[in-house]
Length: 169
Image: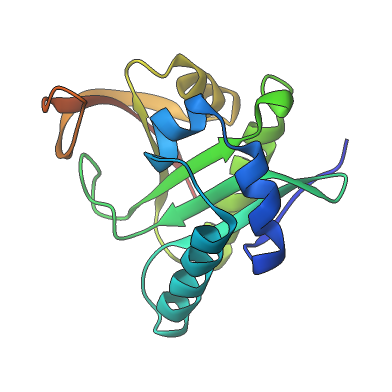
């Protein structure tokens, strides 16, 4: 199994939408995606990258097929320390539990390091999302603390509680 990441492009949109399930919506996207909406998201990220700001998103490929996304965002500060760069990911349900996400996280850490973007990679895992915490641990991250978000709320309007995992770059 060959796992790679490459910058997110329009041609990944249909595969990303097809890979989305209720878990992806719950933990990552917050709503059902469309191909047109995903293409618009790709365009927005490209504009931000051209301006030298914002999130960088990548397609996760297994043997050349897009099976999800991963991004890093130096502009997320909620619960993070200066120099931390937030990483978020979503992988197709049929690829979960096979180590794909942990490999992709390692590759994104390499990109963050080589780009001089920050000093630590950070994963904020909702305390209810045990799968995300397992990915962080498998990718060599260390649990630092649990915190109540100042920006994210749950369905009842309460602050989301996150577990913070970090890895030096």
